[in-house]
Length: 104
Ligand SMILES: [Zn+2]
Image 1 (cartoon, helix red, strand yellow):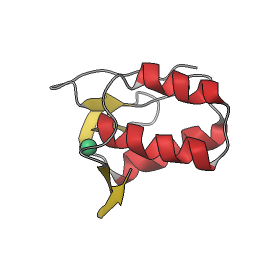
Image 2 (cartoon, helix red, strand yellow):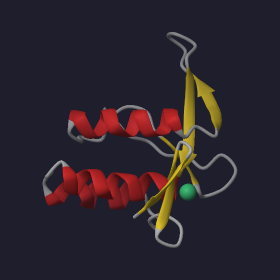
Image 3 (spheres, protein in one colour):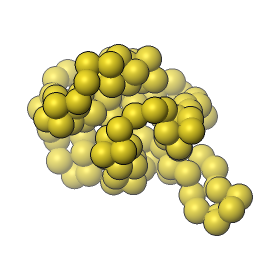
């Protein structure tokens, strides 16, 4: 199981599919966030033709940082996310989730 990232047009986008040895509840959170904040499809799955979406990497990182703390997950989880999401967290202390502007 692999969590991959690609950079279709800019280094700001992240593509999430599969797993990177992360807790199931966090993967569910990632999928939900990407779905809510999709900026478009970068590919389609061969097996079911469902779109594979991407979202802002910085917003995703900020959102997951909060979730990791709230879920009381192991510190290694955040280290893995820091490797996967090699960017700043949020934008000037905030991130976007759907229609909400959230403080980091
Ligand atoms: Zn963002």
